[in-house]
Length: 174
Ligand code: FES
View 1 (cartoon, rainbow, N blue to C red):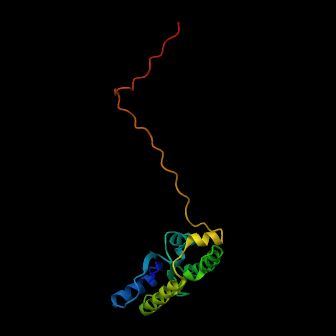
View 2 (tube, helix red, strand yellow):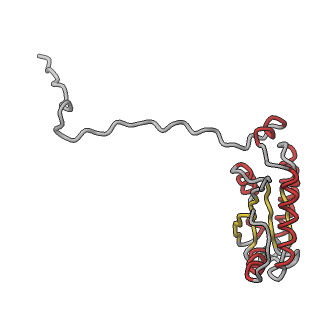
View 3 (cartoon, rainbow, N blue to C red):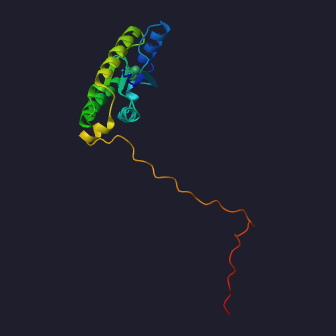
């Protein structure tokens, strides 16, 4: 069975603590997620999400504090706008916007995290693996970086006095 790779961007004040609570309460949830801890969901840059997809994620889950509970006042409102923008962008790139999900999960909601994680993994499993090559064919979103040119080899400087390093004598004109 296909096991999706999920990259989770969790705010440390709420969802990350909720995941911690689920763990310490010995709740079972799919181990498909790799968690990246953020100081606030508002710290998430759209490029982080694109990077995750480019590096092989099949889905991205973002977790933040409930509206009104953000420790930085309006960080999660910014996240909400960014996610709406990203979903449109992913769709234009030929990537299903359902692969990106934003949830508000507080530090006390370990059960909610377990439920959302299971639901999201099932949803992404239903979508199948993300084929970026296909996505590129449909749209113009080449999310993969161009290959770096091979590093140029530089000749090592020969030690002083080594054979063959003597400067040719310059003949003085009369
Ligand atoms: S501090 Fe949690 S979303 Fe801003």
